[in-house]
Length: 90
Image (tube, rainbow, N blue to C red; front, side, top):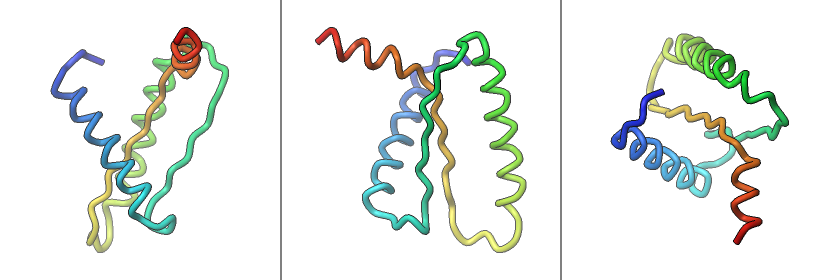
């Protein structure tokens, strides 16, 4: 949860790579899903903990057996309301 320009750039690269995959890879090789929710922002820290726990659990499952491909899991949780408010002001 620290502000780090290198980390921010890494996130931007990951989003670009995901966009490339969306246009290049078939649906049997990738999974892109999302959900839009009305939430209590005070629960963001709980959401972060749950996301990190899920990432750890998924890694434990997938990093066994014959590992012949490298995948990147990227999840974003961000305020959609603020994005829409910014667009409305333009």
